Amino acid sequence: VCKKPGLPIYEGLERFELLEKIGDGAFSNVFKARDLQTGKLVAIKVAQKQELNVKDSSHLHPSLKKRTKATERANILKEVQIMRCVDHPNIVKLVHFSESNDYYYLVLELCQGGELFHQIVKLTYFSEDLARHVISQVADGVRYLHEECGVVHRDIKPENILIDPIPIRPSKQKKMIYLDDEEDKEDEGEFVHGIGGGGIGKVKLADFGLSKIVWETKTKTPCGTLSYTAPEMMMDQHYSKSVDMWALGCVLYTMLCGFPPFYDESIRALQQKVVKGEYTFLSPWWDPISSSAKDLVSHLLCVDPKERYTIDEFFAHSWIQQGMKEIDTTT
Ligand code: ADP
Ligand code: MG
Image (cartoon, rainbow, N blue to C red; front, side):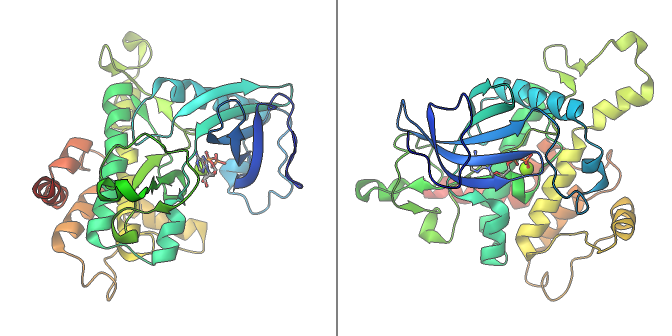
């Protein structure tokens, strides 16, 4: 097999031809690749088993520096375990998992449109319709995780929300958006980000590296032996889903104005702002945004997890419902 110059050759990955590096993390590399057996394009997340090869850790967040070989190993296996159980159109699918002496390989369905993060940078900010289109899909994935799988994602952010543009064929142009068009997705060729090119097709939640199973879906109880579980741990598990709702609020806020709700160059000051829930709808950027959108954001960025919107309250909100009605009338 002819490998592209500059790309590594991994033992045990002979079935795939690496095409380019698309993700460069502290603990893993992600490549676009072709499955030589099927001809289909995939993404492969390669994670090293041995000593972490963090060349320069000075820029890393303290929590990352502390991550050891053992926790990394456990994390990647947990990531695989959770990904194997999930099957939803708004969640990146794990199509294959294998390992060699030195590496784990997660073969994932490829999202050709890249990160939502880059789309926000490119467009500066999103219209309310586009933001609703994206956040509703992410929330659909979250609802599935919370309600069907008892899983909290815990790392929802624009870097982990990937875009799967829908390929256009001349004869198919009319049914581009909102349709679950699974066929011909692997075709290389022309892609469009939804309606009018300004929109975004389908989005998918990726990166289950920090996610956790917290809730037994069959028994509807927290994981672990209930009889010996401390009340605060029970409460903790009960409210753990709310961390994803907070993150949805942060993502929605960021899409609507182009900058995140909480920011400070000093980590300490940033922590303080988050703890107190200190954010504003900064003028002039937020002036043209509807009060309904602001209302939804404020119910998600609510410091008290008991008060914060649940996924059902999110979907019941008028700003989200407004979009549902618009879709109904066009179909
Ligand atoms: P990390 O734990 O290093 O953050 P991720 O799973 O988030 O690992 O992958 C890192 C980056 O690789 C993502 O932010 C994205 O840019 C890219 N990536 C990961 N999975 C895919 C995929 N299935 N399709 C396209 N790009 C992907
Ligand atoms: Mg990530």
